[in-house]
Image (tube, rainbow, N blue to C red; front, side, top):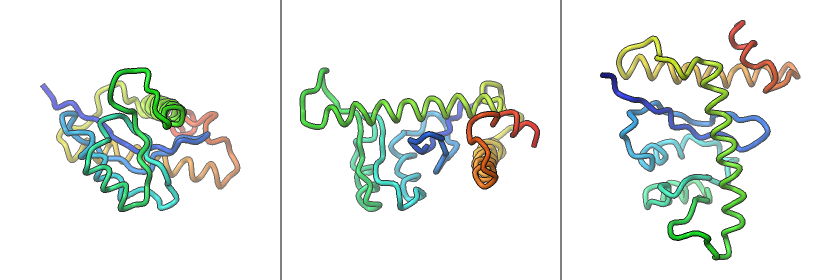
Length: 161
């Protein structure tokens, strides 16, 4: 039985979903530990870190503070929340959910992410998955430079390359 892997990533919340940082880690590694290691890799233009409740930990809060990022996360406790930030969090949470889920499915569709990877071992699998992220980023950059659509026809374009 193989070790289940996850590809934690930070993705832009915009009209095009671009992975800004990623690591392939065992699925049992705590999300806040992985998040803490990805935050220093984010561009300085990033202003918000949109995340789930499990990112409300001291280590993620400190990493955000060091990068001048404002963490916006779901709030613990019974719903509905009635505090002053509830509507802002609701909007940000929806944006994050759409960006993450859509990117995840698009990425998996392009790189056959629903199938087993053709590698064995952590290092080889990390190279494979993170190489796919790099290819995706480079293709988006190239298509942007050429004035081509960053979403339409992306899978066919990558498969052809």
